Image 1 (cartoon, helix red, strand yellow):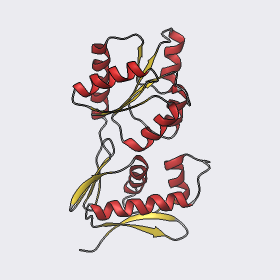
Image 2: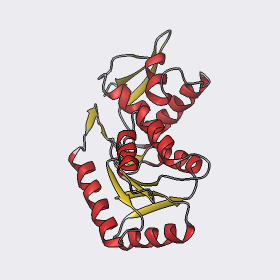
Image 3: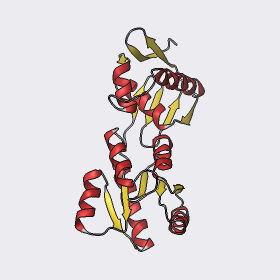
Image 4: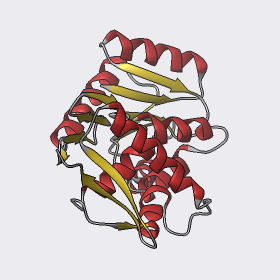
Length: 224
């Protein structure tokens, strides 16, 4: 399991990261909300442990932003605010579970294991041609290998896979990757399409990403 730990208390962050790694899990850790947003969007995590009060971007704002963009990664919210109102706010923002500070490390690990089971229960596999895509782990397998995609590459691929070779408009892809109305340069989509084409070649897939002029993109199986 791969976990993102977001906690601004350096001592606590180090202690929790050590406990996570002791369970055999991979863990990335940071102490600022804006840094966490970057990691979260690109990392392909199975769970996020998120402190509520963070410098740069507070935890609830970050969580709402990720949920609004369609991210469903299980989240355990960590906070010193233990009153009922704070818990309700966290759950309403999109948290899957809530653990007030100070906490026992054994309870923290048990809650992380529960998040992992929840993520695994919702695992999905998408296929097209000789491609197999596992959204939960961001793992792409083709006819000649496999690789891990970034979150944005995965979102682009998934939108195309769900159309089974049908064209997906640029506006629909922009909404999927950045949210409707986002102020993102048009060339960003083409850049991620370029990256995805490289990934398809890297796994020796018999599937190509084609540009549909005036519309957007689609996947096509290459002739044998």
